[in-house]
Image (tube, rainbow, N blue to C red; front, side, top):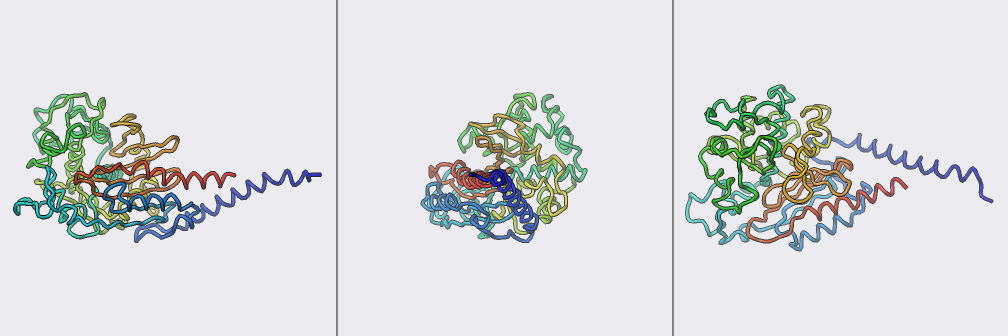
Length: 411
């Protein structure tokens, strides 16, 4: 005969084990050092995660399935659990290459071809001048958005409802379209300024508005000179020029250029010391695509967002800024299931919320807030090589062990 007491105690024991596991995890998280001076190292196994999918993804990268990938990094609960580098000889890869993006080794015709917007030459991309720091391209946009948050927290910008043109008094906006006068900082951050822009709908040639921007002598004036074809806040259009306006907004509001401001109030508090930020002809930092960081340093910005804008007890971003920045301010942006926030993408998978930041050539930061996990990928697929995006494979590699552990913890 079954012991009734034993029957009653089994669920109690199960819940006790779950509670103990939660307490251990909580204590472990509390003891995890902040990565200001470097990430604490661990492994999937030590964090209770099955390692197979991570190993499988790494193997697929090494076969070249996703083209030229330079780095894969995964952080879970504050521990660096995957840190893979993949060697690509960009001097050999770029040799003889020439396109509207630039010229590679032995393909450049003279000194004028050697400049920071030559995307094909290894002196400039993907690593900067032989350093470990890697071009982030449009991942820069998420960092520029963070600087707006910092300035709001410090009281230098009143909020996202401030009119865009109120920060552009050093430019002649007397003939600006009346609709642009109604555009707010929130409209700019969500890429709904109403400014006509042809970037995602054009090839990377002279017809592309962002290519034209990068060849212009004054990026702010160029952007402000574009026609307006929609009421602000009504139409989403991917617009790098709008993000470039943030460089002047930061300068005007704070008295410092975005790179200096970032160094003082974002990078230094997070322990980011090695970085490079490209400058435009007017000495504005290129806030639409010009930042270079090492993957471990970029992950610190993701970790700041995973901790609601607080770093080691110090608030850097305003309360609710992370929630607003990563919310689906635009429910349908681009193709497929993606939404858009304040220069952050939403790439939710089934019922799991995910935020992402993407950059040309294969730059990616993916954040899974419910599991306190983030991943960084660097690559450089700009040479005409047709490689599938790594996003879906990365999501699968992250979610499988996370959901498996969640199931085991609740049994």
